[in-house]
Image 1: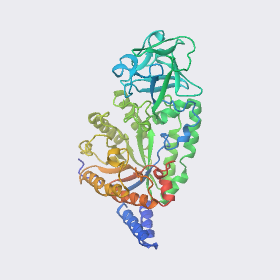
Image 2: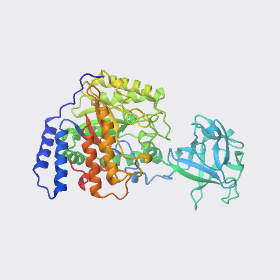
Image 3: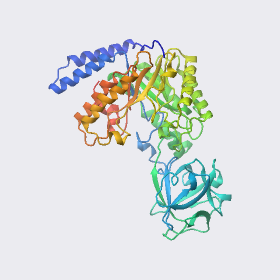
Image 4: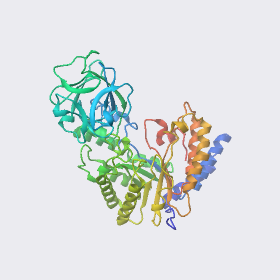
Length: 526
């Protein structure tokens, strides 16, 4: 491990800002013991954080996440059938579910009473109404010879035979017919096979073998979905309007005013090909990132560029740029494309005074991304960044899922100015958090989470960034005071991280996920 890895000292503007914040907080009179105690805690946090980076993520801006701003998707035709939507199909005649036998590589039948993975298909959208269906083992459902015979799931790449029109009933949109390329329809005359040989126009009654009930069991709303859903022209218009309005220079003024000295900006790998990225992505994010760097410099804020979306998807989530939720990033071509994106970003911004660091990858998921592949990638990515700059931090995200918190320490041995990024949420784990009370959540932060963080803070290890956290939980009907205590506990504990922390995210329709809303409504005070 590196023998010396000091935190970069803040610029004079941040020292002055934080010092002023400390003075104001300590001299301001408080009404009541609780308010006084909270302000004293805020002052102590700022005093302990004067050499650290207090950051906010600009999520949902240059890398779309639909849950952050759902209205972006409102005008897409058939917006419930975007890429990555997971569907199950039940024959109304047989009363059982369609299944790709053995998960794929075999025939398609309709003999399952309880649907699971093999009975769930992932949509690849060609255009509104026209789709391809990917199965559990990544093959595509196809009509042999384009129709007239059996339906199977053997093709690894979709063609005309694997492309279907899904026709929805005008009264019940979940009742569908599936039309194959020769104009015939899929049908299930028996449970033992699905054929593509129904001629004419099928009816919608329960005895019709060509009628299926479609259940949507999962959706994705990321950059791939919005771009492919709208198509290139409309997507370019929608995303340009979003990029121009969602984050503005006023936001950097707001952040600077509230003691934030850094922004973490998630981007997708396609930014390296701007203004003409590979389809379905559209250009414009690079220009917006250039502008963000200018705003940051204007207001004394540092920038972390975060490769949030990598080709093939490193975690299967919509925010990774995934088309359908499969993790395929470890394919060699995808890793090389990711490294090319890092090279592009490092070369472009290495000399910019606002660049603080480059995060090589966000939230790779174990076990889909193995440690050996990730370690090799991080080492190569570090060397690429160092080719362009010796001063920028190189940030490496821990794996999410079943992985050891210290597993990246070994590859950081001997490297200069490296940071390990950890993400902490009291969410996404029902077994741990679902039934916790307010106090139990707060105690978890102060005890288990604090202990976990402390194990990472070794004297000769990499710096530690809590790169994502939020004052949200699974508690229902929490009061403002409850949220304040929860936020305060996290600020105090994560303030011990040797590099700093970053709230997720600046703006969000879900109020407690919005740093702006939390500050303006006095749920968080720095």
